[in-house]
Image (tube, rainbow, N blue to C red; front, side):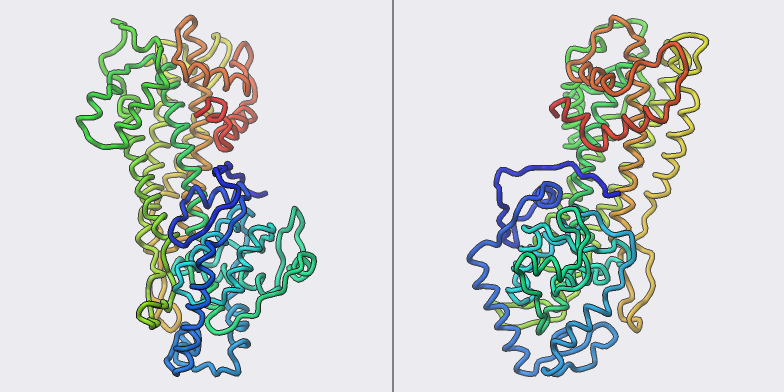
Length: 512
């Protein structure tokens, strides 16, 4: 089953790629929104010039890694001009070592968009015809089957080789809902397979495009889930009957963290008009920290998210090629620009950050079931004979434990490879995949909190709810009914509410 990514539609029907202006939102539009792409027209001449420079430097007999020499441990082996095509084909075949599962179509499109934009940095010297093929594959919706595992996160060569082989007419691809041989698809579309020449093979695969493209989609989901968490925590606060004093923007501004200020302002907006702003002498002066520090916690996560987006935006608009073509200097140099730690670390930080969202949500759900805090019924039961939300605590506790495990950093776990020359890596795809799994689990945890918050809000009969939180309760009730009279199986309710958060339906119905 393919993962579903929410669709962002840009203002333009065609996204023009320039090599230096791609954003994660644009990647999402190309990937999930199926928007077409074009290369900025003036770049075609520059691509030809870069290609000519590769031929010029190679013709002088200058050793060029992956062009007239082997790669990896075989970098000391020369490649003669007569064997160039065979060498490039051998490289693609020998490097196609990815293992399943296959990436969803959206991820494949994101990967191809990021790699295509990377070609436009003019540091690869790749054949312009291959650049056109990547553009054509995206626009004609030809999506090569690419396994997601097998990369150590120091250029995703074992995965990108599967896309490169498809460009040369080999392998299979998803094409308008069918899995077909690429050779058949190209014939049907009137396209000729690319024939890789000097440096083309390495240019297609020496990149972190899998990790970076996938990360663009995951960060887009993360932003939406964080916003949903803001709204749900506000509904939870109403169900809890808590304080709003901790959300005062005057106090938040004294802290000076932009994420906290932004979050506190948003939460006040969601709660506008709520009974919580009315004086209540029976309300405790301060709430438990899982409620009281929500804007601080969510704000810190928001700052971490913005940092990750900033670093990733740099990555998808810069060269991670080895070797790196320097047109102005008319030279080519070995490079370690494929080192992705600058943006892998923020992604790992974000995994830790979202584990805090998870823990706080679980703690709020536990508090909502406790009459000592809410002055409502035990487990939010509508009547004494109903057990209600008791055993569900085990569900979110188990999921939170899984998130805690997934939040552990893995970028340090490596082995020395390629004759012990490639002796470090980052596991970038694993980092991205673990963050995505955290978000999947978090949708369940937030969904359960939403269920409990809605039950508590309904039990507080006659209370005026916030403008957005009140609509949130109505959206919830469109999906699942109030827990009334008899106990019922909750698995279907949990799945329904989780899906609403995961697919973005909850926020869309609130016009957020």
